[in-house]
Every structure is written in structure tokens, then in C-alpha cells.
Amino acid sequence: MTPHGFYTADFKEDADGTPYITEINVRHVAFTQCFAAAGANFPADTLQLLTDPASFDAKFKMYQFPEETIFLRDVDERPILMKESQLLAKRLGLKKV
Image 1 (spheres, rainbow, N blue to C red):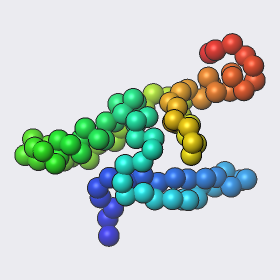
Image 2 (cartoon, rainbow, N blue to C red):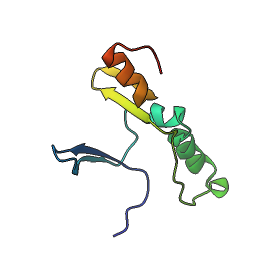
Image 3 (tube, helix red, strand yellow):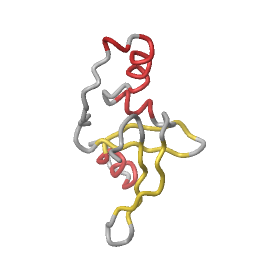
């Protein structure tokens, strides 16, 4: 079966850098707002599909986020969208990059 529809997959790397799937969600998730901020507004797409399916562009879309874009999320905190270099600068106590 070929996957289709809206879904997200969480990955975690082992010590050797091999990625493993840890979770698959078939719904909008907490960090959906980060996707929207980066240009992939899935809730707007869902609303358009449900309210005006004839005008919905159902062609596959591969969203490309700006280089170094990362999403930080935690169970009890609002997700954050930032560049990886900004995170490293904060962690190392450096000025913003």
C-alpha cells in the first residue's frame, strides 16, 4: 500500500546516526503551526479541501524549508521554529548568528 493523505513521522537517531521511526501520526500535530510558519499551512489546506474540494490542488507537494530550519518541541511548551545555528549559539553562549 502506498501512503497517502496527511501524516507525520518522528525519527530518532541511534549513536551511529541511523534513523529509526518512533511515531507515526495520521492527524495534525502540536507543531503544525511551525510547518505553517515555514510555508506549509496544512490546516488551511485541510479547510480548503473540506469546504471547496473542486478548487483544491491535490498534486503532491514537497515543501522545502530554509536551510538549517529546525523545530523544537516539548510536551508542555509551545513549539519553536528556528535555525540550528541560533540554537548552537545560545547553547554555547555566543552572539546570534
